Length: 236
Image (cartoon, rainbow, N blue to C red; front, side, top):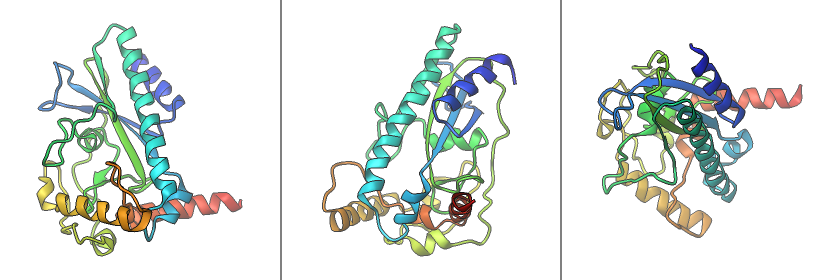
């Protein structure tokens, strides 16, 4: 890791990023910027504990708070790289465009797996060793000479099906992810969306464009390990 990268990572962590990695983004490069920087922040353990059964208003509020924090993190990182003379673009939540097929041009999960932050679980969500699926992601793109992390190309979920069995809409198919696997083999995305909207209206009493559920990532084996570690730390 070079000094530029060390300083960038330190800045991103100072702004709140808990996981940071660099991805080679050939095939996804934007305007010649062939490096992606992935960042992740964990959902606070008390929030996750309470969405084990159903979405909560606290999670809905935290969802927006975390999105704003992620935008600040990647905007700060992109500004730093531009100050150093490189091209950089923050792939912010507020600028995200989702098409009719529920896809984005530069998926955060693609950058994150290529940057070594984790793998894609059977839920079609990112899974990390430290926080399970209880993470929110963002990214930035740059042409700065950053040293790439080792990508993750295979699932570590094994035979676990907790997210599959817990899905209230039965939207999770149950296949094991490998790199470049199409989303359709893992998830019925539109059923997931419809289920989220229905549960929000039934449980929270509203739906205003942002969809949350959280059941699949709350029950994830790795997420549960994160929660156990938080409980243990709290009583020490």
